[in-house]
Amino acid sequence: MTKTKAIILHKSSFKESSYLVKLLTNDQGIISAIVQGAKRKNSKYQAHFEIGNLLEVVLLKKQTSSLYLITDSTLIKFIDPQSITFPQLIYIQSALEIYSQLIISPEDSSDHFNLLEVYIDYIPRVKNNHILIYWRFLLKLADLLGYPLTHFENNQYKFMTDSDFLLNYSHDTLLIVNKWLSHLPNASILINSDNIIDKDCLIMNSFLINWFEYHLHKKIEIKAIELMIGLNE
View 1 (cartoon, one colour):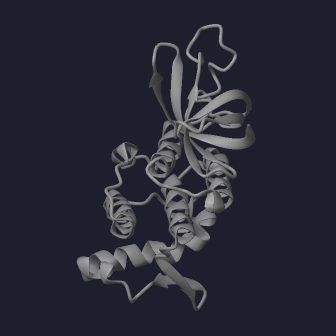
View 2 (view 1 turned 90 degrees about the vertical axis):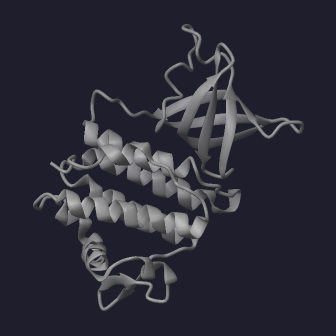
């Protein structure tokens, strides 16, 4: 058995009374696990396995299956929909959706776990322009995955100019993307400035997700991203 901290990325029903969950763990990478009996009304674990929750779990791995079995859990921190705004919830959901589509090894697990834990903890404190924090999170994620989009030069972020990926975009689009990339180091200050226009949000969201798709060679689907536009109020 193994005890580790974990963030719930996704959950679905498994048989009549159980859940199948995907977890980003502190030291085991991203794994899938069964929580037996958690759907029962009298289960002490019923509230533990909501997406975004931070838990300490005890894992049992059977040699005959790729799935883990969660034999015990302790709720460390939970996301209360009643205490956060809808935009905050959407930006947390978007980060969880991205991670649920990645493969993270045990060797890289700690850095990714820390990134997501800090992001989930910080978003509820942001009152305006949450999307800036989301974009900064994506840049940090790209760095951890080994596909940095920018490099730091003359006290600002600039494109990795040797990337063929940039050839897919017009000069005007790259100007908009570069403008916001250069602002992201000061995102904590800019969240209190004027709202970002929807056009810029659409361009940046598309550009950043396409960057991941280009390097990961797979489609990244984020349902929550369609709800982002108009939330920067």
